[in-house]
Amino acid sequence: MNQQEPAAMDDEVAEQAAHWFLCNREGDLSAAQRAEFMAWMKGSPEHVRAYLHALHLHRQVGAAMSVHPQEQGSRAVLPMLPATAKVVPLFAAPVPAPRAVVATRTRRPLWRRVAAVACGLLLVAGLLPWLMPREQMLVAGHGQLREVLLADQTQVRLNADSRLRVKIGWFSRRVELLQGEATFDIAADRRPFEVRVSDLQIRDIGTVFDVSRRLQSTRIGVVSGEVEVWTAGDGQRRLAQLPAGRVVQVDHLSHAVQPLEIPMSMLLDWQQRRVSFRDERLDEVAAAFNRHNQVQVRVTDDVARAARLSGSLAAHRVAALQAFLQRDARFVIRREQDTVWVSSR
Image (cartoon, rainbow, N blue to C red; front, side, top):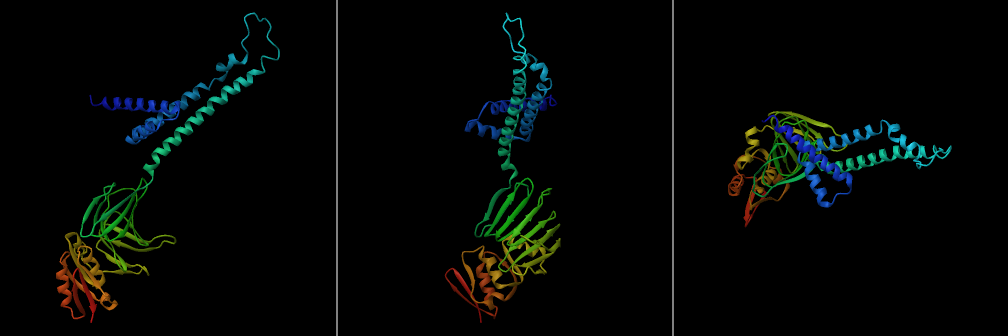
């Protein structure tokens, strides 16, 4: 019983394909018919194959009809004479014959070519959106952590205040980290997966990795697998090839690659709503806290911005950060409503 179901389904699809072929052949479809036809074509790859098969059969039939033109055109070579005619005209009979044969031979192939081209154009126009990458914008709001499953089954985790542009097509998978931080667990696929950050391009070789777009640099940490880091645009050059366990930061201006001694657990602490930092600039630490809180930390001078800190605090506890900074003799701290001001002494 189950063995007959696919055959029955094939017959049904073939009938539908023949129906749509005849509809397209008879004339222009209405807007509603075009929408219905395109919905049917997009419903399954089997529909596309069945429709192309209908086109192929039509061409075969047309070719078979033109194999024996003399048999079809023999009656047209001599004009039909009245029953009373006893003399065949010497010159009149053969003159129209070539015209009739030529007309028969040229008209049908031309019609078939026009129909095939029209159907091909209609098919390409309908399938073009499938071939072109589809753009999607992913956003994690202020203080929000977000987890998303992409169309290719890649898992993406977004830190707070992060924006990601995704383009997944038949031939490529590209994302651009416009703001914030994201961790990618790449699904196995023949299509390459690329992450762009500013003018850097990170190429996946089957892996899990974290990317953070920071103030002066981009931080990249590889949890498993391997990635390559390239400059984007013209004159691309490879900056680094990173195996599992490596963390680096790439300067936005010079593209200098600096290794970082950060444990992978600390790198991903943000997924537990913690801000962990080891020998980090104060302005980067402040930016990490500002993603999660209404109370914002503002650093007023370059000396304070460049000061290095190490620690780990809950992301939503700005008061804990304020107390942490007040114990550091390098800084002067003052609180004004929803702003914590930090300056150097």
